[in-house]
Length: 269
Image 1 (cartoon, rainbow, N blue to C red):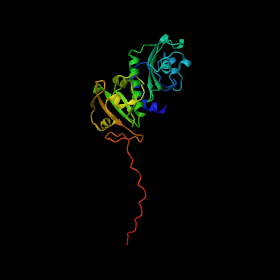
Image 2: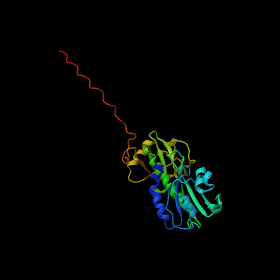
Image 3: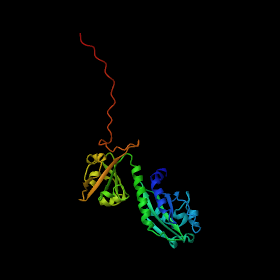
Image 4: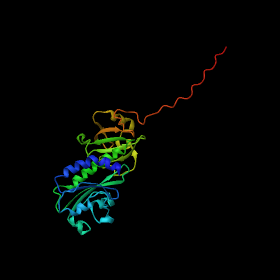
């Protein structure tokens, strides 16, 4: 889970800081429901269950702990909230939890972000908060896994670029869109987790037209085949960590190695 944890690091720190004044606890699990990151205890004597459960290595899957928000997300891949007596076991009767999924470039569930509290209400919309941060982590993971893709950042409102609300799409060197995030699917008007499609079919522009966006200092306005106008930026990173913000030739063409120099023929007498 190293790549998941690396992608989530900054957002987990920000979310822990946001929750510091509440009685809430933060957990990140892997695809099986095993906790890989957990916030520290609050010191509240009424949170004995969360003190025992919120630890790295604890398994929160449904077959282990019964009904919990993380366990349901592991089974369904969809966000959910479980309140108090909605839990299966009575020991969790005072626990409230909200969880949201994190997917990778292949559309597979790779993690679950959860916020829980015990013996008191959240006092805020926990589902909305955890949903925003799970989306942000997923977006970072998608980009981290796209070191050989042209990544398109797009939205109908340019102010939303660079936020968890931006659409993202990964384009391979053959001009095929190989992944799109949830917001991107909404803007493109296509079902989520749909199969690979040519970039020209989805965006109305070919790879040769989109590559120069890497060198643009500002987002440019394009029109989708649906007629919707969107603002687009692009980034292109390769495995060596270089981000070619000014490149327009991709993939790079390597000239053939020179052959042996032929020996000079003797001059005719």
